[in-house]
Amino acid sequence: MNPLSPLRPLAVVTFLALMVALSACGNSESTSGGSAETASPSVEKEFAVRQGATKGFVDSAKTESSAVVLTGWAASSDLKGPATFVAAKIGSKTVAEALPTIERADVAAFYGKPGIKKSGFELQIPTAKLDCSKPAGGLKVYGVLNGNGSQLELVENTKPELEKACA
Image 1 (cartoon, rainbow, N blue to C red):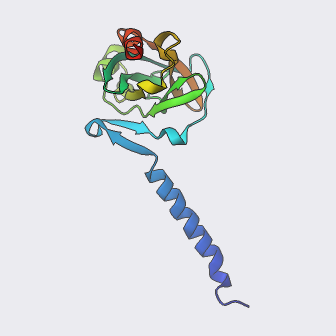
Image 2: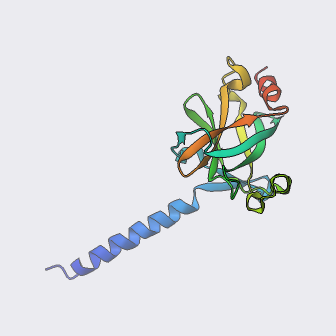
Image 3: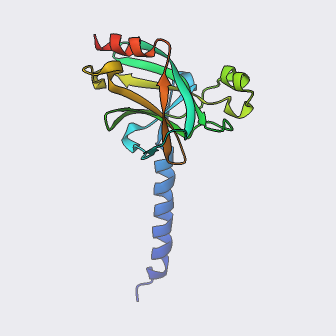
């Protein structure tokens, strides 16, 4: 009998726990001085499209060098808390993801719901990924909660800015 055999299961469990901990550390990165968190597009999260799963808007867009930066907010449909994440898709491909962690006191005050104060997000969409043959570059943005995502409306300057980025 190998004297290390009783230790082998412990080593496997320790290794797996270490791998899980390390993978959790690498799933997000901070941008804009730490105010916005961007989920890694390489860890694309699955979700079902369901109308009414979340509420929110993409309320501004600006072109910065080779990307369009979208900001907005996404929350649960009952407005008790932020969405889990926000995903930008062109066709069936996810081109950006973000965690809604930016303070939006204006949204919380408007609805009288303090639980959605940190429901703001920022998405950076590379202009090269836009489908310029379609309106608004073919972009759709979803607020996602509990595996269900609802499309967020593009308001104010967002559609013209996306089309300008295609020009």
